[in-house]
Image (cartoon, rainbow, N blue to C red; front, side, top):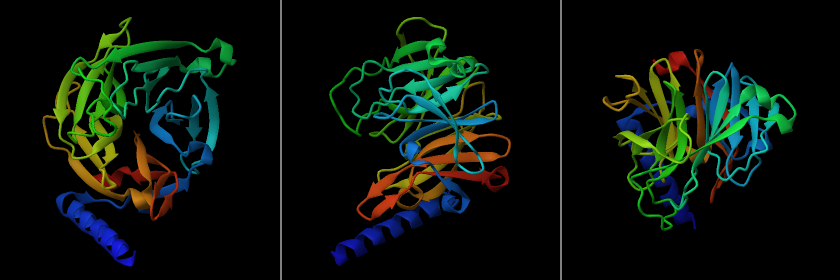
Amino acid sequence: MMTKLHLFFGLLISLSFSAQKENQWLKLNRFEVAVLSDSLKENSGLKFYNHRLLTINDSGNSSEIFEIDTTSGKIKDIFKTQLKNGDWEAITSDSASVFVGDFGNNAGTRKDLKIHKILFSSLQKPSNSISTQEIPFYYPEQTEFTSKNLSNNFDAEAMVFLNGKIHIFTKEWESKSTTHYIVDPNVSGNQGAKKSETFHTGFVVTDASYFEKKLYLIGYTKNAEVFLSIFEETDSGIFFSQKPRKYFLGSAFSIGQIEGIAVDEDGVYISGEVFTSPLGRSKQRLYFIPSLKLK
């Protein structure tokens, strides 16, 4: 048993050293804000809406939207949507509505991918008056739907709203890349998402944020290495024509399974859900990296 543990720790040290050599190293655990409420053990996605930091939980949890205090990590408000949480994975917004991505697809078998558009002002009224719209979509490139758990290229957990469109960034377990798809929220009926560009990230993307002509993608590898890549918008809605700045943030064994990112003028907020391994458990947490640390 001891030999196995020595080998395990040796592997972690080796992986960390390799990641540090190839990328800028930014220890995320130094920027911890708080351990999040147990109600957010499986949080997925972060988004600022009118200076409110919002998050959701993924499949198997309630269909509520939570507001988090940025300084304490405490839940400030809970908004009930009355929708079904098939596998919620991402949240974004325009000036009046929030969009919730029900497109988690670990096995690659889903044919009911959708985004919920929710008028935010209606969330603050009685639940029977909530204004919602369903935006169904599919990937035209996906022709096979046999179960390939954690080994398919049509999972997704990341989206941003830009130029009147929803931009989805896939979580590609097989290729370790991400593909940028565009969905039009004004199209009625089931629409084919339009493929725009692809980039080999080297990790699976678990959330995205857009701020001041930069795209922030965060995620992890199967070896539990956590990375942040920052892309420049070189043309309107185009991000992958140049190499990004890439940061190694640490291991999920210590910082949690990172699932959310939101950026504002102050810096970068990152959230993680609970992470369980043979060595123990890392709790769900909120982190904040000041802008100056990413210059």
